[in-house]
Image (tube, rainbow, N blue to C red; front, side, top):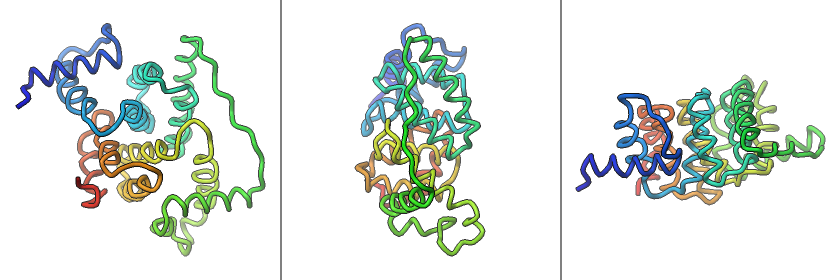
Length: 250
């Protein structure tokens, strides 16, 4: 049986590996962070460290929480995630939470890149008609979600949501999922984390099931939800696990 002291020691090592030995924790919070966060969640098996970081960044970016993001962006770079990958995390999170959030998170990331002497990733180029973009978006959405692409606000006969959903298809699927920097599997796990943090169970359930179509396992989807708990709260993560349903039970 693991003791609290052992869990705390494991968490302290994990925290130091992520943020360095000089990482300062607010007085009175260190034990909770080392035991529950870094020992209890970051040290869980079932999901790689880069994936855990992507999920954490996604959960932090939808608000956004810039102080915590500054620390995690540096740790993400140390884990081997590229500025291109981080930019894509923040752009995709911005699609869900608002591009005003992405303006803040990307600006913060660029400050950190400049301090480290890292070049900014170039914006992808390309052109097509809006009709072509719509067609590509619908095909990507249907490939990802299957029959679920016709549920809820995505239902073809939902005339109210249809006033906006055409644009969402164009950019949410026709653009985002074709940008370089993240794999489809990483994007699906990021979506799971972001929708957990945003407390959107319907979207979380849709992307949780669809993540299985792009290479994620049920256990990895569960871990993506759990990973958000320190960033956006344990109750939303618990509700997210319930939203996934029994199909994801190991």
